[in-house]
Every structure is written in structure tokens, then in C-alpha cells.
Image (cartoon, rainbow, N blue to C red):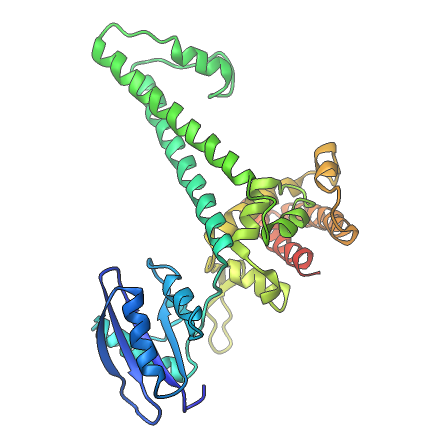
Length: 362
């Protein structure tokens, strides 16, 4: 980084901010406590900017990207730093806001930090709603478990069909009667929690479908829906969580961002590789694994998939068909070698990530 640039590093929290200012030629930053107020931070940065060009940075955290967008809107360069990639000395056992801000400024000048990708406001809004849907699904699962375990404790099991939570199962649940009022109240409370969570989930999914035609998500979703196992909500999740795939120079870099590369601890003549690193976006990794399960079946384009591919670029449709053939062979080749199914699916999901990158960067 240019030595004549003024570095301003923030250690940001909900109620307080510490700014470390590293002027050209200085080795030790000066520290300034600030209120957690964007206009106050902006005025402070503008005062510093009177002395020369300024570059700002802060760690990614629960406060989000509001500070970065605020400063960028005022023509001040600001990077958000990946916390997991900040170099830390093993023997350092003291952590304070002032030390963190000071160290951040020094490392930022030395170009020893890694900035993360900043999503657009539309992408972040879609991502928040998608994660809200995941939370609602978790709430629904917990509510169903509480109800089913309550019934099991009292010896009531549904045997009408093999699957639970179908229409016959719901009719059976609503037809339960209890000899004690407290048990009847408990049953209705658990059943009401399931119904409320299901209604919330349906409302969230309906809201998400309105985002399918919004830019910049629409062209990405259109391309992603050409692949087997990737329908509307899965395509929307990949489009929102991955962002602009063109920021990755190659498919392996995309795989590394998602966490598909194996961990390694090799030294000298010894080479040891372990499980995948799982560094990166867990939401994106989950939906890719779910999609990868579809590729264990023989390549086939059904009516639903053909309908999803209408209007998509011919090159992407061809890539999706190539993915079906290659990943089907990959799955059965690894399975024939005795690999555990989860390992096989992980390998298929890794290659599917490469096909997704190619489809989004054409």
C-alpha cells in the first residue's frame, strides 16, 4: 500500500468505536474513541482527510456493512476485513479494543489483511430473507419434535401411513382427545405452534418468490435453474449467497471460497490431508449438497426441468446436461470404490460448484 496514504482502522461495536489513525511516516497509530454514530464517524474521517488521502478498514462483524456503505457514499475507500484471516501471534493473550484497532491499522498498511466481498443492498436483503426462512424451518422442526415426543410419552403413535405430517397425519393429530384438561391444553398449544410456524414458512417462501425477477438476481437465477436439483429457492440462495461469480478467477477458487478444499497438515516427506476445510459460506455449502443428491440418478431431463430451462442461454443448458452426465459417473465411480456416501456427495457437490461458476461467468 502507498506509504503516503493515511490509514484509519476502526474497532466497531454496537455502543462504541475506537479509531486508530496511522499517518505517513509513523510507526504507531494514534487512538481516538468515538460514539457509535455514523455521522460522528463521518465527521471524524473528513477531518482526517484534510491531511491527505485516507483509506479505512474494520473487521466484519455483527454491525454489518452500514459503515462501509456510509463511507463509500462519501468517496472514502473502506474495506471490510475477514476476521479469520487476520494474522495473530500465538503468544498474544491480551485483547482490547484499543489493541485491536492499533494492530488492524498496522497490518492494513502492510497489505497483510484480506478484504471480503461486499454484497449489494438488494443481495443482502434477499440473503436476510433466505436466512429468515432457514430459521423458520428450524423452528418448525423443533415444534414438530415437541409435539411428536409429547404424544409418544403418552403412548400415541400414528400408524396410518408411513410418512408423518401428511393430510391423514394432521387429521389424526386434530382428532386426539384427552381425559385431563391440562393434557388437552398442552396438545393444543404444541399443535398451534406447529401451525403458526408452518404459516410463517409459507409466507416467507411466497415473499421470496417475488425476488426472483429482481436485478441483479434474475439472470443468475435463470441460469442456475437449468441445473438438476436447483429450483427457484435453491437458485435464489446460490445467487444471493455467492454474489457476482466473476470475482473468482477460476472454478477452484470458487470451491475454496465455499470450503470444498481438503485440509492439509504436511511437513517434510510426510503428507497428510484431512476433511474439507468448511471455511466460507455454510448456507451456500448446504444447498449445494442438497442439489448434489439428485445426481445419483441416471441423467434425464423431465418436464419440470425442461420448463425451467425455457428462455435460458443454450450454452448454459448444454453445460447443465454435461454436469448431469459427468456427476452421475462421478458418483457411481466413487461409490463403486467403497467410499462413504457422504464423502461421495461432497465430491459431487464440489464439482457442481465448478459447473455453477462456469454458468454464471459466461
